[in-house]
Structures are given as structure tokens and as C-alpha cells.
Image (cartoon, rainbow, N blue to C red):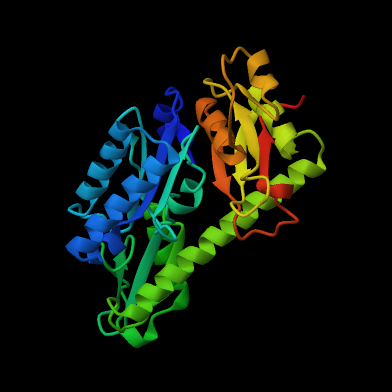
Length: 322
């Protein structure tokens, strides 16, 4: 994931409110349930120590979301009485999440707001001897591609494959789903599409974990473990950050200053780098801020083989060796 969109969060001192909302569940609730939920978010932030202005800004943003045509969900990051960033989610959060902390809790975005793989859905119509294509599922605009066969029953697999390969290249689709003559709006096709996307994401995570394992095997091209990662972050050496959300290092406490590279295992290290004050923060969020500020990428390796991925759930491919 390109973290450039997170740069507005790098220059604010915080602390931050981080809220993840399932928009579909919010819309399906009654008016009273929605009111109680937004009030519950506000109370949770107040109890955690958030200022009233920021609590109000978050509640107003959540209230507006119920009127938006938002299919999945939204994350809200607020400080100083302002919602600074509200990225759209591509996967629903496991539940409403409310956090008040020194840094914005951005690590879940790797799993919840990652770029959805583009799927080309193709239906072979034997009666008309053509392909009906949808660039990203049956809800998209249709395109009909004549196959040129005199008898649809004699369509050649090679001809179909050639047309699909060309269309995939033109649409830059990540995967192709071939369906039959049945109704492509049916639940079965939507389930197949969701399953194909999930499998593609898992394979992509496994590929990134394998690249990390190969780099680790070569020596100094990779780093893992919180101390080594913080060293690399201070030196702006992280090219790609790898995070497994359930890894024990992800929620390990580190110390941070106002600047992204003011990070350390202990409170004295940010001070050495010029920080006036050091406060505790989650390791994954601190490294996400470092990566975003340094123009690095980040990727979730959830579901990949833990043996291939970074030990503890946090790792990085480095720009240059030490």
C-alpha cells in the first residue's frame, strides 16, 4: 500500500482519536440504535481522555456517515477538534473500534482499506457466440465481444483464452472469473467473486512474505524485531514495512516524539533525537508513521506462513544495507 495518503497525520502532534465504523451495519440499525452507538463512541473517547472538541467532531462525522452511500465503512482520525482524515474502507471492520492514543491507529488500514484486486468477470454466451464482460463484477458496465464462431457450441478454448488475455491486459485486471450462462447477478457468482478476491489477496500476502524471507536469507536487506526496525526507521532506511496484525510485536509499546523519526525502545532515545517529550505508542502505529513520512510502502502479511514472514509480525525490506 502506498502510504502517501497518510502524510496529513504525520505533522500533527496528537493525541489522536481513531475510529473504525461498519457503514452497512450503521445503516441497517434503527435511528435509536444509531444514536446510542454514536453516543457510545463519544463516551468511550471521553473516558479515554479525549477533549470535548475532538469527541464532538468524531460524533458529527459518524452521524454524517449514516446518510452517505458508503457500501463498506470508514475510518476517522481526529485531533484538536478536527477530523483530519477519513479514508474509505474496502473491507468491513470486525466491529466499531474506538481508540484515543498518542498516534493514529493506522495499522488496521492495511487489512481494511487495501486496494481491492480488479476482477474481470466473463460469461460465455453459447447462443450468441460472444463474451459478456464486466470490468469489476456484474455491477459494472457490460462489454460484448463477438467470438466470430458460426456455431456457439463449437467455440474453441484457445479462441476464448486469447480474447480473455487481451481483455485482461486492456483492463489491467488482477484476475479473471469465468462464469456460465446462468444469471451473473445471482448470489453464487457474487460469492465466487468474493472468494476469488480473498484467495488473490492471500496469495499476494504469501508472495510478499516469501520476498521478505529471501531478503532475510541474503543478510542485511531485511530487518525484523522492534529494536532493529526502530534503528532502520530513525535512519529512513525502510522501503517496505510488513505487518501481521496478530503478531506480538505489533502492539508492543515503544516511545515516540513529535517527529516521525523520533522513536525508540526506551524514553531516552527520542530525547537524543531532539524530542522535548517522549510518550508511549504501539510499535505498528509508530512504524506506520515513520514509513508514511519517509515515502515507504506497507503491506499486510496476514494469512501468510509465519515462518516466511517477519518474526513477531513486524518486518521491513530496507532501502540500503547498513
